[in-house]
Image (cartoon, rainbow, N blue to C red):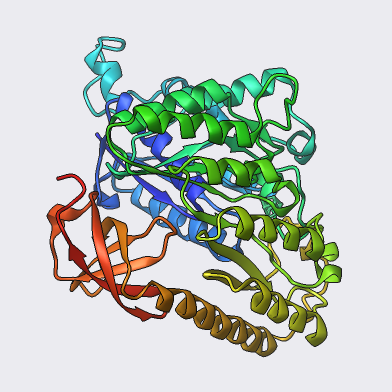
Length: 480
Ligand code: SF4
């Protein structure tokens, strides 16, 4: 029996999907690239944009039509708002939160479905292989309870923290054998007015540091070259349990010390930190340990204090500036990435001009810019979306123009220098190898040499183009 998963949204969902795969693999299901060929179909949903939720609906309607032809089991998990969860219960066989994932095999069994391993182990040896119950017992018609909004926004108690910890005991089945994500935290306490994450993932829960360090150690031993620590606010790590857990800076230092015992070099990244919690000791840890990649992704969202206040970002431009000054002072070679939203509700031309000024001041290497659109479930979705669409498009273009300018300026300074580059794959044109420097600058090397994927090679930069440099490989690979 086979399964297929569709993962929408951010890296957090991608990381979660690696754990879903482990559970399904352990149940004896086999992955298939072809969703038509699958007996189990699942979606890791994203509620950040209505478009992503619309994709869930279109998929499940199609899958439910396929049920007329063959037996099929469907589920949805990931970032789902409570009101969508209620609607999904009528459409999917299972709707569950990620912290319920370890119970998924039991849910399936109670539903009357026989997984391949259950047959293999003789648990239900009188059931024909591949059988899927078409009529679930009435009392078990859904794999989930509906979690109320109140339950999601209240601080988790000790028991709920332990339940979350069970999810993190599930090993990931990484897509890549050289780059991995390691979740260190789930949920968010910040309640930015444009964001629905606190209502879909609940409040912040930090994963136990001993579990994180053990997972990172395993990845290092297996030769992983790039490890990204994931969370909605990675640098508030441990603040939910200050008496018993280490801080984010201490976590980075612990990982930094592991590099001394590693056989192969590796880079560790983290995303996303929140400007409010960007303390000096985090930057000091980056400066001290060479394995912590020289790249900081610090979301700004707006360069205007009044807009930041309406966004409930809980930091000012002054505080952001101080963080950037410390980064430039302690790790001057670090690249700086950010996120910007243009056309947030009520954003005036003068307020937008402050965002442009901030970009001129901080000279970001990379800007992930988005036009504001109300996100269902977020506080600002109740406010008038009053910046016209064409103004948003024009503002987005102006941010993009500056992003190209500053990225190209930085990249031009790289010309003539040699950098270690992690080769990540073949580019879209299928003409060059694609890779990343330690600062996550995109690199292209002419020619297709698939054997280099996952290795680190020295590249001499020959030319700077928008958001990318072209270069030639020099010397031999750092490792074969
Ligand atoms: S910090 Fe703000 S934008 Fe980030 S997940 Fe939390 S609420 Fe959303």
